[in-house]
Image: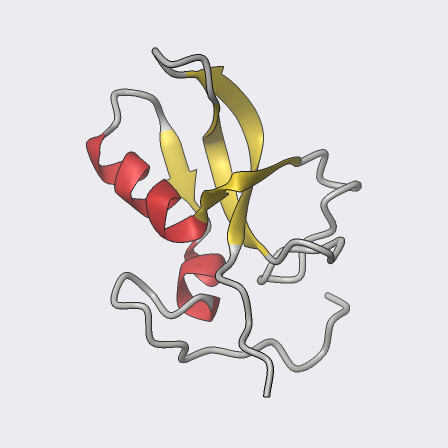
Length: 97
C-alpha cells in the first residue's frame, strides 16, 4: 500500500527569508500536491492561493508560532491534517463546499 505524502502549504501571500527562499504568509492552508484544493475544500485557483510545495504543513505551523511575519493557519486544515500532534482526526467527505 502506498503511503501518503505529508501535506504541503498554500497561502495567500509570500515573503522571502534571509536565504532567499519563498515562504508562505498571511492565510495558510494545507494542500496535497497534485490536487487543486486544500484539505478544507477550498479551490486554490478561485481563492488565488500560491502553492509552496517545498514547505511542509508542519513547518508552516512552526513558522506561525515562531516567525515575526503574520501567518494564520486555517483551523479546518489544522483539524484535517491532524492538528498540531499529527494524528489525522477530521476527514472531508464531500469535496464540494
